[in-house]
Amino acid sequence: MDAQVQLDADNDHKKSPTTIQLMFQGTQHEINRGDGPLTVGRASDNDIQVSDPMVSRHKHGRCVFHKEGPVWVDWSANGAFVRSDGGQEVYIRQSALLLQGSSTISLAKRPEEGGKVIRYSLH
Image 1 (cartoon, one colour):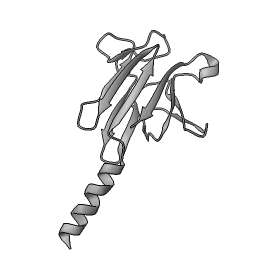
Image 2 (tube, rainbow, N blue to C red):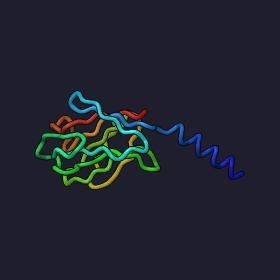
Image 3 (cartoon, helix red, strand yellow):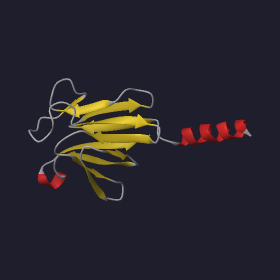
């Protein structure tokens, strides 16, 4: 019975995404399951640098794989607007959100308000 449980867990893991692709200003970034986080902020020590005073200097947020799946973690004072495939928008600030499908993360402001948009897709 334990072997069957392990087999089911292995099959579930294979169905879940193994890569997060992020596109910002024409440059693609990628993080694979098992890699460290991909950070976003204004400072040069971030993987994705965003030039906008509303974006936190050091680590506005990051994409990372948790055991639940791919997650956007927001550490900022101004938050992020994450849109789903279907267009539903969720505002998060200093919290985390499980990513699904392909859509956008807009930093500090909605896209229509001038927020810097990162497109993501899961593979």
